[in-house]
Image 1 (cartoon, rainbow, N blue to C red):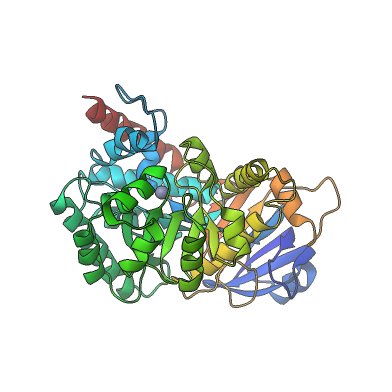
Image 2 (image 1 turned 120 degrees about the horizontal axis):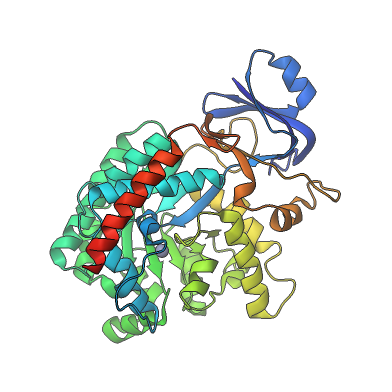
Length: 443
Ligand SMILES: [Zn+2]
C-alpha cells in the first residue's frame, strides 16, 4: 500500500472532484481509495507514504502523439539545411535523423525521452517511431527503455515507402512482430498499433501489406493532412482527399489515431465522426513547422474524439495545452475559444483514447483506476477549487512543477529524483551517442 498525502487533490472524478486536504491510497497497480487525509492516514497506518508537501495531487498525464526518435535533434545543425517548407523539414531533418539512427541510439533516444516524460508528469505515451537505418527490433529497443522507466506505452513503427519497398516491408513486419509481443504481455503496460507515416509516402500496395499484417484488434497511427502537400499529392495521385483515401483503404475506425488533420474539409470531418476515428492535435509542432492551424475547435464541437499530443516538439503536456490555448484564440480571433476544449482534450479525451488500447481505466483518481498519479509543487495564491482548477494549472503550473510521478503504483520520480536510473549517467551516455549520430549525419 502506498499513500500519497498532504496535498490538494484534483480527482477529475465528477463524484468527488476536489479535496482541499486529501490523500490517495494505492494498492498494487490500482487506486484503492481517495479521501480526506486524516481518514486515510488512520485507516492505512502501515502504508508506505509519499508526502505531497502541500502541493497538488492529480492524475498522471497522457501524451497521445510522441516521437522518441527525435530526441537527439536538440541542438543539431545539419549541413546545408535551409528548409523552404514542411517537406524540406521532413527530408532535411527528420528523415535524415531516422536514416542514421542505430539500434543503440534508438534505445538511448527512448530512455532520454522517457526521462523527460516522467519529469513532466507524463505516465502514458503513444509513440510513433522511425529509424530506417535499422528497422528490425527498433520497437523492442524502445520497449527495453520503457520497461526500465515503467511508463505505459503504445508503440508503433511508421511504415513508409520513402526508403523503398524493402524498408516498407521491414517496417510492417516490425509492427507485426511488436503487436504479437504486446498481445502476449499480461501487464497492461504495453500496447501496439500499425504505424503509418502519411498518405504521400505510402502506396496502395504498402497499405494492403500493412492491412494484411495488422490484426483486427488494432488500428493505424498515421499523420493526416499535416502539410498541404499531403493533400495535393493525394488528390493528384488518387483523385480523392486524404480522409476519403483512408476510408477506401479501410483505415478509419475507433482504433485509428489520425495526427494533425489540418487540411481537411467538412466531408472529411463527417467521415471521421461517422467512423469514430480518433484525432490528435499537436499545436507547437504545427506552429513550429509553419504547417498551419487545424480546425481543432470544430472537431471537438462535432464530437470527434480529439486528444492532445506533442509530436516530439516538447514532452510537457501542460506546455502543449498553453500553446493550444493561445493558438486557437489567436487563429479564430475569439477570446472564448479553447478555454474548455483543450483541458477536455487533455483530461477527458486523452484518457478515452488510452482506453481504446489499455484495459486499465486512466485519467481519474477514483477507486479501481490505474494508479497513475502525479504531484506538483503548486501552491495557489488565489482561491482554488474544482471549478477553477484548470485556470490554476494553465497559468500557474508547467511540466517541471511535477515533483513526484507514480505509474501503475510504482514511484518513478520522488522529490524530482528518478528512481529507475542514474539521470546524470544516462545524460552523459546520450550526449556521447548524439555526438556520434550528428557526425554520421554531417559526414
Ligand atoms: Zn508526428
